[in-house]
Image (cartoon, rainbow, N blue to C red; front, side):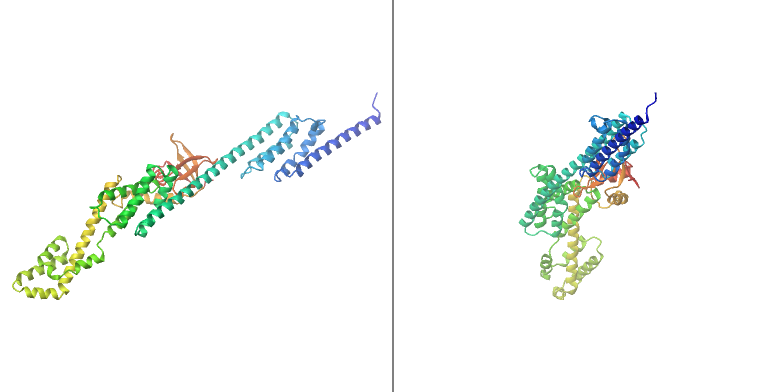
Amino acid sequence: MSESPNNNDNKDSVEEEKSDKCRQLVNNIFRKMNDNKVIPDSLKPIIEKLKVPFLDIAYATPNLFAFDSHYARVFLDNVCRVSIDWKDIEDRQNSYIKRLESIVDKICNMEKYINKDFVKYQNDLEKTLVKLKKRAEIKKKRENEKLLGQKKINEAKKETARIIEQKINDSTVVPDYIKNILNDEWTNVLVILHIRNGQDSKNYQSKVEFVNLLLELSSNPASPSEAKEQFKILFKKYQKGLEMVAFNNQEIKEKKLKLLEFFTHINKPTKTQKDQENNKPEESIDPKEIIKMSQHQKGTKEISETTDTLAENQEVKSDNQKQIIEQHETKEPKKSIHKDSRDLNNESNEDDEKHKFEKTIEDTDESNPLPLKDKESEENSEIIKVVESFKAGNWFEIQTANGQFIKAKLSWVSPITGKHLFVDSQGLKISDKTKPQLIEGLKTKTIKIIKGFE
């Protein structure tokens, strides 16, 4: 017996009423999510796309939103929760947005509602959020460490500046060149040791002793023969300190040679001393003495010729001493001879003094920093220029202990030590290398530059 038209109409009316309720309920839910100010605005258009598939699910599943444990409802709740958590996490590459868009597209293309798919999508979103949180924690930890490290650096710099300033003020006269050494490279040496070992450490106190010794020797000039051991200690400490702040062998040689030239210069006879010697009575200068002085100056043709002439005059005119005295009183010929001879003697003494300084430096340097120029430095000059051009963001391949090459990005260059910090694509530290290590790595091909890698 067939159903009456009234019964069919009633069923249609019930189904239509049911559809209206589902539609109205889903619209209300999504409208509330859209109005929720806690959910990031950038995610709302993506979540809005879920309205259509959730209408279909609601039609097929009576009382969908009445069951807290329903997979589709749990998924929708978690999307909102995870999205709220995501807004406080830095995501420069928009990893979460891309993952959410991919999942929403899959749900919109579902032909049949499957519980396990919603569970999988939910886990995918949560895993993405966990990764982002870990990255954020690592970054925050690094930032805190950086702030703490910067605080320690600032404190060390302040204390170092105070110590050096006090010692300079306590000294009588300090040349600008010595001030520059103390306020530049040696400040960096003391700052590093202050941070690493503390002010009470033996290493730190040793470097402070360098300051005292440098100020003493520069304020009270002394020749190597008078203070040989002091100069040995000075140059040895200077080299050790420069090695700490990433100066290479060539740079250390140049700085030590410059310091050598400074001490050689300040040990020259003063103008007053020269004048006193030049103003001695002419009568006290015997021509034979001039001959001896000229013989002491090897290869000096002008002096030899002049002194030979004086010797001849001494022999020829020995019976007329008065004439020789008058010749001295004319001043011009013999005074110039006297002056030139003494100037050459001064130059010879300066060369001898510098040679003694050089020997002192060589005794303190195991790597034999003199002579200044060598073939190795010329070969390294191009590589040094390349290393000095490195910038944060450059990519490299670095060989590990097992011989494998890994990609690494230059993240930071320390302004104090000159060390280069390398990280992987996740921002995790791989290695840090000094300037000499980078130069050696490029020479031995254990470090390679990657061009165009982002």
